[in-house]
Image (cartoon, rainbow, N blue to C red; front, side, top):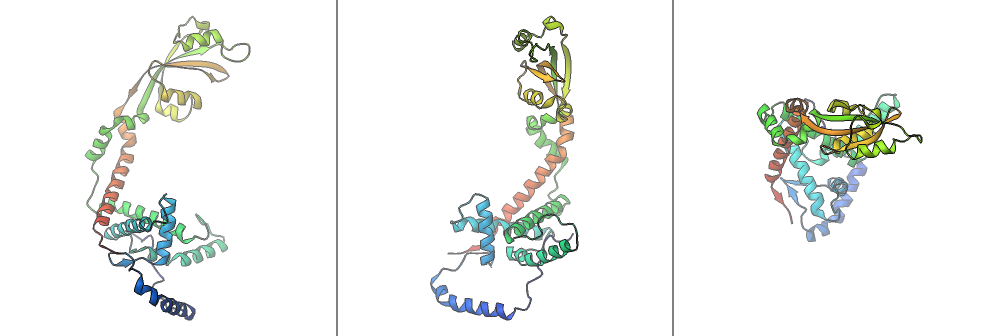
Length: 306
């Protein structure tokens, strides 16, 4: 499997300007280093200014206090834990954020060439470091998740586990296989174009007898698939989904006239619901497997700092 991000710029010869800049930076920092505490390190990694900067952006987007150094440090620890898991399953060879940030310029140059040649690009032509880093994290996580699903860690999600998660909270999955049993009655249209007020009042009190305006009540079943296609209109669909058994819905507009529904009850086909949601539940369980591996990797980190 190709690696989502592979560092390509490390080890290149320094330009003269870059070398001079480094020498000036070192000379100016000698005195300060003697007084300042050493920066925190995780598994021997001391974070660069570029890494701390991109962590600040991510921490801010996540609602953390960017003035609190622990916020961006925790963010970077999480990232290192993801990278460790990704390497362990062969999904990526990234070891630290700089491995990703080091290739931003190359990626942007390649994308600019593609755009100039009339090629198709997805996303911006030019990435800023924080955006490219965020995209790369997403790619690495997805590649890692795919490897886990393929059995790279031996943490296979079994059919029994999927069924157990479904059975633990069937109500959460019931919507896809619920049939609504309703009585439908047509409400006559008044002279002003609205529903007849007398009939509408009776219907709203729960009276759907055939004598109302000559309408004959009709017992119908409405499936989840029908609701998903919005065949009953947004108002009727929203009302039905939230209604209690025995509730009267309407009058509601329908095909130039007015109708009302009384919800007599619901029934759920559990096996149909399981068939519909099984793959989604399996994906949730695999995501939880990955989160647990990342948490374990973070717990195993050796942190040294002031």
